[in-house]
Amino acid sequence: MLRFALQRILATIPVLLIVAVIVFMILHLSPGDPAAIIAGDNATSSDLEQIRQSLGLDKTLIEQFAIWLTNVVQGDLGYSFFQRRPVTELIYQRLEPTASLALGTLALAVLIAVPLGTICGWRLGGWLDRFLTCFSVAGFTLPVFVTAYILIYFFSVKLGWFPIQGYHRLEGWDDVVPWASRLLLPWLALGMIYVALIARITRASVSEALTEDFVRTARSKGLDESEVLIRHALPNAAVPIVTVIGIGFASLIGGVVVTETVFAIPGLGSLTVDAVLNRDFPVVQGLVLFFGFAYVFINLLVDLSYIFFDPRIRY
Image 1: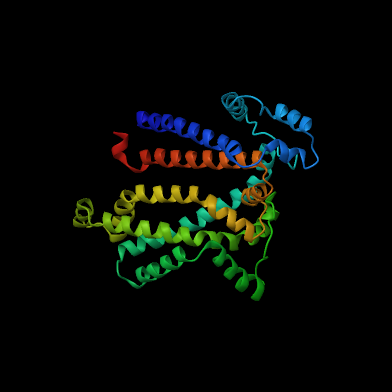
Image 2 (image 1 turned 60 degrees about the vertical axis):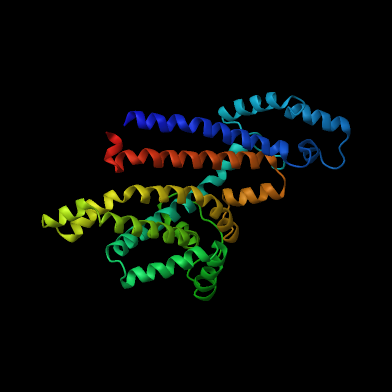
């Protein structure tokens, strides 16, 4: 078990290094001169040269990468061109709304999808299974922003049950209700596709596990069908379910950008859009690096979780 964990942890090191190289090259392969962007239109050649020296752009590419990687290891992602603030500070300030949106979406999707997929895998061909098929088609077909506008129209404009846009920070117990009321529609809009994905994988995994020999043995011993399903079939179907949950959570990054823009949530997604539009390369670099590292870290946790769900790995 320890060997498996060490292998997975060591395997992430070259992946993280490749991510760092790609992120570093974003600044140097992008069109335009960062020094000219910072200096403005009225800058002289001496001003440009001074800015290049202060940014280290006058050094070789390898020297620049070594300096940049050293700063990244120390937690320094540079300064924003336009806001004149550290990138790490900007990310930290926008992290709470994005984490609330992503974690809430994942929790809602898992709570709905796993029981739904388990029941459908247990009762193949039933009315709930047919409903899941139709729901999955709708979930995979409708883009996130279309679902978001439909929810806003019915529940915010017509019924007036929820605020249309904005975010309320969670600072105490008194903030739970306004915090959740502003995030429920984004959770539903972003979670629809993940409910469909996780439920379909759960259905397929459970239905396959129910055909195995150990399930027939459990039934022959006189165990209740619910006990067979929960104690035997579902644990053996857990590995693909956990895998798709982890991949889905890592893939929330793309959906977060769209959802935060539609609902005017001041998170990392809206910060990414603003940085791209303003050509604020240090912020773009920092965000891509953060998202890349988060993706690798989540996949590492998924790999390590196999130790607990699959006893064969422990041996």
